[in-house]
Amino acid sequence: EAFGSSSSVRGHTPTGERPHSPLCQKLCKMFASKTAPKDELCDMSVAVFNDDAMKARFPSRVYSRFREALVTGAPTSEDDMKTIAECMFTWAREQGAVSFAHWFFPIRGGSGASGSMCGACKMDTMIDLDWSSPEATKPFKATLPYERLFFGETDGSSFPNGGLRATHTAA
Image (cartoon, rainbow, N blue to C red; front, side):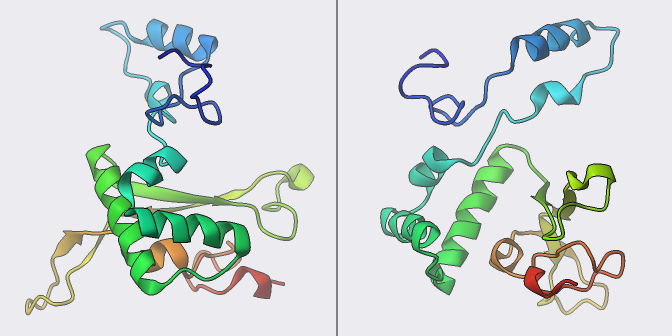
C-alpha cells in the first residue's frame, strides 16, 4: 500500500515505518556507493513504536487502559507498566536497538541555547547489572525496566552528577 493512502497514520505507513523524503532518498542513493561510508541518517525513523505498534503488541485490555490513561491523566498500574515495558523491549530488540533516548524540553523554555528553542536528549541503554548474581563483579543483562519508561525522568538540570528529580521541582 502506498504512502499517503487513507490508512497512513501521522505520516507513517501502516507497518509503522516512516518513508523518507525525496531529498533523503536522493542522499541515501548518493551514499549507497561501495566506496562511500554508510550514511546512518538514511535509516532514521524507519521503525517507530506508534499507536499501530502498541495495538499489535499490547494485550487488548492493557492497550485500552493505557490509551484511556493518556487522555484522562489517570495513573497506569504497575502491572500495565511492566507489560508495556516488556512489549517495547521485545519490539526494540527485534529492530536491533541497544539504546533509547528521551528528548525533552525543560520548562524554562529550552536548554539554554540561543533562542531557547533547543531541547535536551538523555540516552540510556537496554542493559543493567544482574544484581541477583552471586558474583562480586555483577554481569550485565539485556533489559528495559519499566521504571526507566515511567519514572525518574530528568529535567536536565542535574547533569552531570546523574541525580534525578521531578521536572516541576527544577528552578
